[in-house]
Image: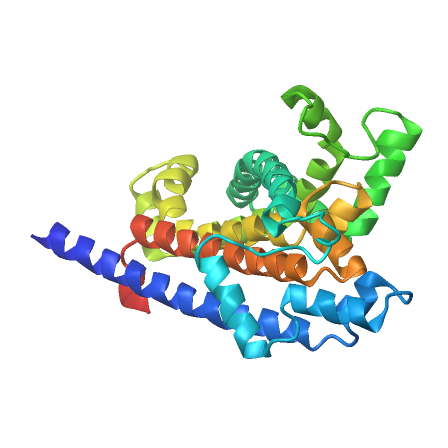
Amino acid sequence: MRTHVLRMLVLRMLAVRLCFGLATLFLVSLIIFFSVGLLPGDYASEILGQGATPEAVMRFRHELGLDQSAIHRYLVWLNGIVHGDLGRSYASHDGNVRMVADVIGTRLQNSFFLAGVTALIGVPLSVALGITAARFQGGWLDRGMTSAALAAVSCPEFFMAYLLMLVLSVNYHLFYSLAMIEPQMGLGTKLMRIVLPVLTLILIISAHMMRMTRAAVLDVMAHPYVEMARCKGLSNTRILLRHALPNAWAPIVNVIAFNLSYLVVGVVVVEVAFAYPGIGQTMIDAVRTRDVPVIQACALIFAATYIVVNLVADAVSIATNPRLMHSR
């Protein structure tokens, strides 16, 4: 009976979080659409060029629906998104129709591929390093790893990327300097191409996750029940893995979620540095060409990814430690 009640409480809290996430996504969609609409200039004139006649500009504006009110265009855009239609790219003219989904589809897959490889290596590595640093707190190993993590956190992404490119590609010719991948490439070739961007991202996110894991574990290790476990003669390693880590899991999951969302929504600098064909690079290209539907779709995907990842993190935190429901 108690287990059933607890399960219902967990499901109700997750339902509330899901509704809150959907409401947040709706507000973000409003901000994205109307913020992009405030950009100066006329999109039709910019895309058709200075040589376009007023009649051609007017016809193009009517074709794109730009002669309609902003609220009407927002409702049409939102209705299309609900039904899985991201609209037409502004690059669609003269019989060359390009759908936004086609423009960003492959690029989004590439970003998920880069993020997935980085997460598979970086997350377990960071947690293991954080636990090791906490296990040997105050020792030379702890001080060395903490100093290295602090140095990595202090380096901007572009500096880290170009430093690795200079040393490992230009000087020693170990890896590709540019991570240009194609759909027809094999998995091994793709992995070899993305070694440097993956290494850059691991150095950036691992430092943060390692430091937070170490801090969370040390915070739990200061509790009285840990001292009681020591008095019972349990080893430090067993106390760390059986008692401290499960109770420190909630903040660790949250920081992991934050860094995973960064891998998709915040890797624009890394993708540009290595010419990686991801969604961040796509958004930069869309800004250059004033392709508003692509910009709006990319921004909405970034927001949705961040919300979904954090929702999953909340679910994992609550599932692993139901006491969190009572502390909020």
